[in-house]
Length: 202
Image 1 (spheres, rainbow, N blue to C red):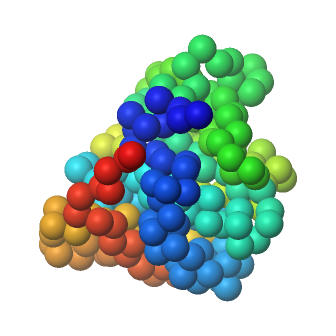
Image 2: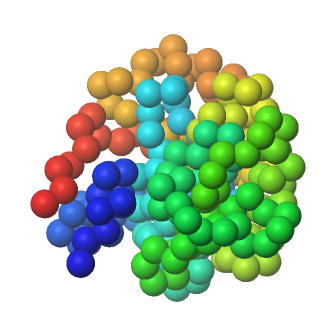
């Protein structure tokens, strides 16, 4: 049975929807795995680039390759990208802004069920990373929106590695060059270029 909420967010879990995208993720996941990176930040090249759909596929590919548990964290507690998935759920504990939902197999999605106030971003990010490090073999962190509130540089430093997510036909070279200057060189794994038009869901 299809999940209407996931479909609306263009996050496909059925093999018929995403087999090709998942196959494209395998070499990326292999590179991340070779580097033994545990906390991987996914950085959108611009405000127009969505990270969630490709991030979930990376997470599923990681689960398949490693056999371990993987978390995908929708980290922006002020403007969560996929909060609809956790609507009606309670955060995991009284101090956390995040609720956990297991998507498929050993992939967990951590997302705020509702927006939090200003100033909660970095403390909540640090907290969820600390907790996730003990629970998951690898953690993918969607860093969408951190630049908007000037917290991206501090968020970058919490990661073991960073991958820029760009979109063919939309992302411009000057955006990538500017972002490249902001990323710590020791963390930068490069750019992941996604398709110009998402594949239609059947």
